[in-house]
Length: 57
Image 1: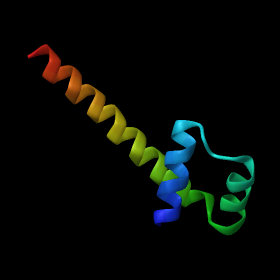
Image 2 (image 1 turned 180 degrees about the horizontal axis):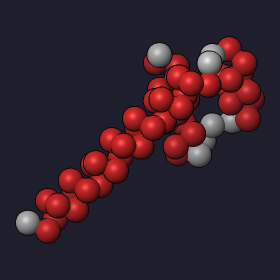
Image 3 (image 1 turned 90 degrees about the vertical axis):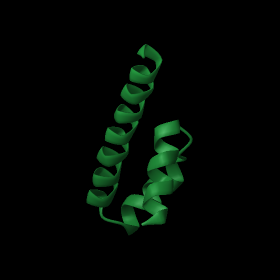
Image 4 (image 1 turned 30 degrees about the vertical axis):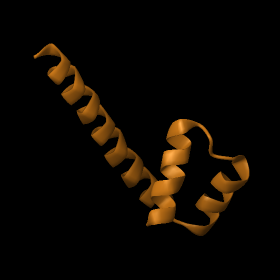
């Protein structure tokens, strides 16, 4: 699971190499990446909203 999280983070920052991306999807189910990616996106949106709320108060 740590490998999936690390891979999703690399993709978020745009530093995922093509070779690593292909290896990830050949060795692991894409659903794990989708679920982790959606979860991390929700966490990011929540954090941005929370920081904006803090800045407004």
